[in-house]
Each structure stands twice: as C-alpha cells, then as structure tokens.
Image 1: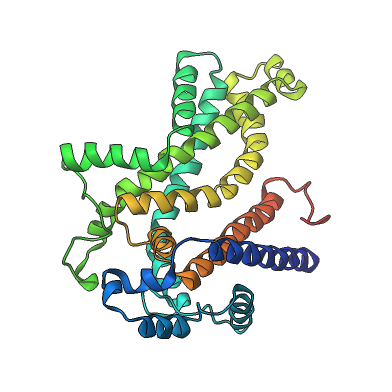
Image 2 (image 1 turned 135 degrees about the vertical axis):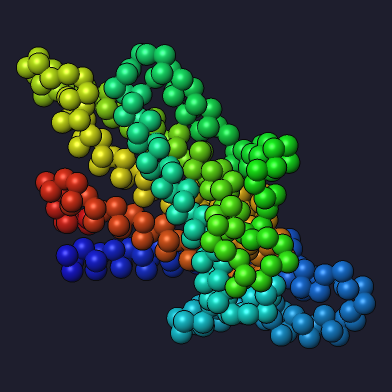
Length: 325
C-alpha cells in the first residue's frame, strides 16, 4: 500500500509539473491584456504611468520566464497568488467556489452513476427489444448534445415556460446566505444537476450495456442459463459483478467530464461555482486564478482515478496493488 501511494505521489508531481508549464505557456500566449482587463471600462481614464504601475504591481511587466519562476517559487511555498478579479488569495477563492460547485457535481455524479448503470443493465438484458432501442436512442442522442445547449433548453422549458424552477443563481436574489433554507438551495440546484447528470448518463449506459452483452456471450453465463436460471437470475449472478468494475472505472473517470460540463452549466445558470470562476478568469486575464484552478482540477481528477484504483480491491479481490496500481 505504501508503494502504491508513493507511485501515485510521484505521478501526481510529474503531472502537475507538466500541466503548470503547459498552462503558463498557453496563458502567456493569450491576446488578453491583464492590465486592460483589470481596469475595465475606465481604461481611457488611466494614464500610461498608472498602467505601468498596475503592470508592475501584478508583475505582468516582466518577461514570461521570470514570471513563471516567480509563480513557481511561490507555489512551492504554498502561495497560489492573489486573484486580480476578486482581490483575494487564489486559495480562498478556489475554496469558496469549490464549496458551491461540490453539491452540483456530487448530485450530477450520483445521477450519472446510478441511472446510467441501471439503464445499461436493463438495455443489455433486454437486447434487441423496443426498450433497448429506446435507451440506445436516448444515450446516443445525449452523448452528442453540448451541455450548454441542454442547459438552455431546460432553462426555457422549466423556468420560463412552466415556471417550476428558478432562472439561475444558487439562492434567491437579494437573500443573505444565513437566510437561505436547504429547500431553496436544492430548488436552485435541480436544473444544473440535471443538465450534467442527463448528459453523463449516456457514456455509462452504453459502456455497461456492451459489457453485459459480452458477459451474456461467455461460456459461464450460457452454462448458467442451460442449468435453468432465468435471464434476470443469470444477469444478477454473473452480469452485475462483471459489469460493476468497468462501470466504476468509467464513473470515476467522469470527474473530468463533470468538471468540464460544470464550467458551461454554471455559466448558463449564473451559478457561482468554480466553473463560472474559470470562465471569468479566462476572459479577464486573471492568470493566478486561472492557473490555480487548472492545478486544482488536475488534482481533483487524479484523486478520482486513485479512488477508483482502491475500490477495485473491494469489487474484484483478484486485482492487486502492484505494477503501478
């Protein structure tokens, strides 16, 4: 176990190093002027001397290499820098925004795993039936639908036409955080979570269906049916266990897709989470915040894959923590 975590720590270190270098290079090539984005509409009122002072204050007047090593040295000391947009430490901004996004991503993740796995089992068991074709049609359709488009459709139908859900935000406008009830938060969470969950269900459904079909073609499954087990009994005995491991693998691999979908969904619903902060940081040239979010998302996805590796041992004891696992 110690060797397993040592290998994972080494891989994470190398991954963060590569991601840091590549991200900083891409951000440095961005055409967005951080000083102009920082000043905003008052840019015409700012003198050249003031612009130079602002550039010096945020360190954007130095060559990219110097800025990278200065940022990297601060990062090694645990300092992610200060956000240009929020005027707060990047670590604090990420913590507050991630807390808001955690409920959204957790709800979507649960919907994706539970509903996707059940639909995959039903579709694979009833292969060739009308229900199987309907589930496949839904899965293939959702797999090709952009999250922002589905978010707009759900917003128009349920918020504008029917009026069942709020148009956006994470709580009623003009209400203090201490005054917001849990029911109100859940009411604002419904549409963003459904947007991410409905789309994420497609991959899990199709993958589980195909894996179950492969199990049904195996000798041990056919032998169990020949012994007199019904289709559902054979699926329960052999199908669930052999499809659970691939489903877990895919489910934890969806961390990256859920995070990426949250960026678009939060923007449509004006949900004040980490995804919306990512868009604002990119559009306004907030380099410290953007790099901090990139590193945080990298760790987030890596941790998801590591948890999947550990859960393998419970689902299938034949897998051992060796060879990099």
